Length: 315
Image (cartoon, rainbow, N blue to C red; front, side, top):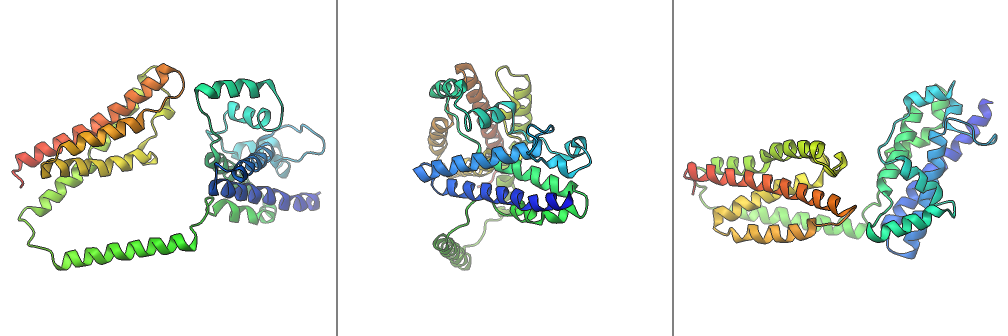
């Protein structure tokens, strides 16, 4: 029987490689017809692998599952991760939307006219690769050796690599930037007496308000109605946290330079970009209120920094 299991291993590795290849093709041009076909191919492989890794009962006598490689289904289940993206609704869509002409297709199409929905491609790929890594790491020896290719697929970058031209442009831009900084440093004027204190204030304005934003946001999403924990991504998993680091430095710089109007223009465009209808009207409004709260706290941190700047009589 071990010979059969060993012979099946390359087919599992193929499904993983095909899934990642389809993901990369989709990202290359997601809005084109080939991109649509690549997405469908990606989802077919996701569905196949999801059933292989998560099915605890043999639905068909000829089907094989991850737990076949263990002493029992319970043993594999004790090692299997539970990725958040694979909710019952998501799994249902993988079956009924992808492989069946069901009534749900009509229902979902109607719902999506009011609330756009997209397949979370990268999250699904990460979830399946997470299953694969856990599977190989939990396998008894020598069976783990049959799946060595899984480690290569699961640890490789899942997004397309930069082309040679793009890499060249990146290197040129980096060289120009570093060269310009060198010229500026060589011709730099006399630094002010309190330059280190000025840098410290800017650094504090960039970083300290993160604690305020995170603290308030966590309380709001836990206590606020029509809000879910997923409405606020915690810490630096949220790209907005990096934006906050940069924009608070810009805000303080605008105040120091005497151009506070820059802040108003920034918030105008940010407010337009931040208003994204989704879900019910109440849900969309609550999310936007959370967005405004985070920005208000971030700006409050800048205001405190400006107050410290003036109290220290910095130029």
